[in-house]
Structure formats: C-alpha cells, structure tokens
Image (spheres, rainbow, N blue to C red):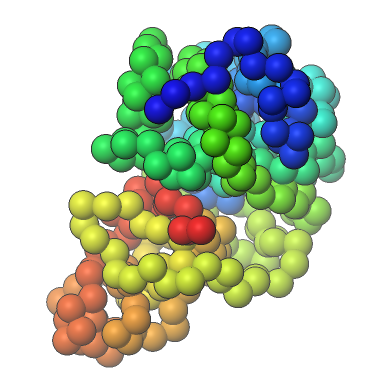
Length: 324
C-alpha cells in the first residue's frame, strides 16, 4: 500500500476529514459500569495526524485498583493521585473540538463519559473513531485486532503495553499512516456519534478485587431507553474469531455479574440480546452447559456455540465493528 508522505498538502487532503484528533487510552479498574479510570493519556494530533502534544495523568479511583497485573497501578501508587474531577478540566481541554480516537473506542468513550457524568459534567466530544474499524475499512492484513498487531503492521515499537501513555503513543504512531492511507484512497472514515451520559447516582462500593456489585435501581442506567440493535446478524460466533456487532447472544442460568448489567454491556458493545435460542442465535452464554434448560437443549440441538461467563466477558473487550 502506498502512503501519502509529508508533502501532502491541504489541496489534496479530503475536505470532509476532521480538523483534529485526540488519541486516547484509559486504564481502568475493570469493565463494568461502576468501574473507574486509574490513568488517562491523550495525544493531540492535527488534521493530518501529526503530533501536537501529549498529556498523561494517574487518577485515584477511590476504590480497589482492579487488575494490577495488567496496568501495574497499585493502591499505594494511586493513593496520592488526583481524583477525576481534579483532572476533568485539563482532560476536557485536550478533547475539545477533536475526534476521539481509540482502539476499541466504544469502551474508552463509555468509561470517559461515565467519569464526567459522576463529576456532573460532560466531555466535549461529539465524534469518535475506532482504529479497529478503520483497519477494517482499509482491509489491513492483520492476524487479529489487537493493538500490538496494528503497531507491528506499521513498525511501531511498544515499550510498556497497558501503560496509558505508551499505548496512546503507539496508537498515535499507527493512526497517522492509517489516516494517510485512508486519505490517499478517499476512504470514508468510520466516525460515530458520542452521546454524553446525563444520569448518574452512586452505586454500591466495590472494595475487593473480583467482587461484582449488584446492578440496582440507584446504579448506572442509560439516559434513554435501550435501543434496538442497529446491525444485521453476521451469523454464529466462531471460537477462533472475535465477536462481531449484530451477533445475537442469549443467556441462561445464574451469572456472577447481575444479568441486567451483563445484558446492558452486551447492547453497548453493539450486540443483540436474544430472549430465546433459535437457529439464528450466534452464541449462548451459560455457566452450566449441562443444565437441561430450554436454551441449552435448543443450543445443543441447533449446534449453537456455548461459552461461560468468564470467556464471554473477555470476548466483550474485543468486539469487531459490523460490516459496511
């Protein structure tokens, strides 16, 4: 693939492309609605993807830091860090007027939007761009949709994986050639609307690693009714591939995460929650596949793939965008 070089001028750049980007990475205490940001980084880029500046901050989550083995941030490290409301203005200034760019942008945007809602504010972001979706638009020959694979494709060296500042740097360096490739081919950028959350009430505290809070009436709720899944069903889940937006997911039996919360996270990822199992069901999630429930019986009869809750929550971290 031939890339545009630094001699590209405004005259040859697609007029419809945004005028600036904020490449973002956040590390968090987990994946649920009441999880918190523990660190955040932003690389500001100009219209053609050139770095203008960067910013990074630790954030005191006011709770257990979660998977320390992933992000490396212990309670001792975070104890003296600023609270999110104390960095909210600076963070917002870095995002203001720019397209938020992230790898699996839906997740980063949701975590940011929730933090601002807790702080009784809103992030000044109107659009986001997922680099997973952009790599699909460009048909990049990647073995998977991990950041490390995108980085390797463009020769970008990771130094500290799961460190927000380095992950943001890596993504910024990989985004620029992606953006230039898109401009060269006049590819439509996969921009999506960002809708700030407007409702927040404190939920129950979660002081212990691995403890899942119940999803109660005073916990997170979307500011509007749950919308219908806008994506077509791409078919069944395949064990060697990620989930894809539009897949129909059914649940059976008890789950450690409250069922309603798990279903909301499913919808937020662009998946369809199925109330029953049919030949069109993409995946059944159950912790007891041998139970003789109607869903498990039908799933086995139809050959519907079955995974447990732990495997499913990992799959939710890497849902690929719908085709088209």
